[in-house]
Image (tube, rainbow, N blue to C red):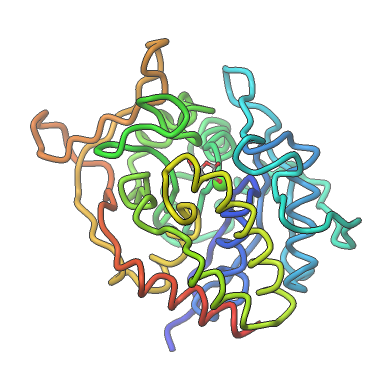
Length: 313
Ligand code: BDR
Ligand code: CA
């Protein structure tokens, strides 16, 4: 087997961030060097507790976890309790985690890891607002060459926004950070709503996960039940889009997704369309492509992968 890919994860758990972590943290294909928390779905107080709980749940205390920025670069923090519930991971019992957070700031951890790496070595997976990644790039521009690729959940084009008519939540929360990342010059793979809205939980899919009956699948099924309730009303569907695990699923099985290389820019000024990602899908601007934009997925195969990996716990 090929050497595992060295990965740094940045996230704001969140039930779908949790599914991303469950996929990543037992994948032999990945060498997760650390996980950094960013404020997004709920406040940092809850995000860092949730992250530590999730590490306890998968029994991966060997993976160091860090606290990153507790607010976006310029704007005030906008949270999403209306999607994820008061705790950010409603659907499971909150407990006092055993895993300790490292004392180093998450942004400095990202910088240190990248500085130690070879050129083009580290994969960054980002499933929350991009604040920590942008802050690392600004604080230490020398690290950019060390990034192999940034695989992120964020943005929307054909599908429209989920927090405003034009913006997806992660990008809306910190559009300025997104701007820094989009302009960094390294390969970026973006999983926006165009594709994540095709990865819907259904009663049967959650039932298959619950039937695995191990300690992690029980937690996953509990969270997915809650997550499905809110979004099924919003989307008039049976369940909810499982946004964040698309990133790791792509690293494990790229054939699941269709991607197109195009230029993406983000709106940072307009009050009306703040956080909108202008995806030049038909190459009308002539701007040099900076992103591989995911636009389609084999959703059955995605859930087969998720279920099969959860079964390994
Ligand atoms: C994104 O926003 C968050 O609520 C989810 O965790 C996901 O990262 C979807 O818009
Ligand atoms: Ca998230």
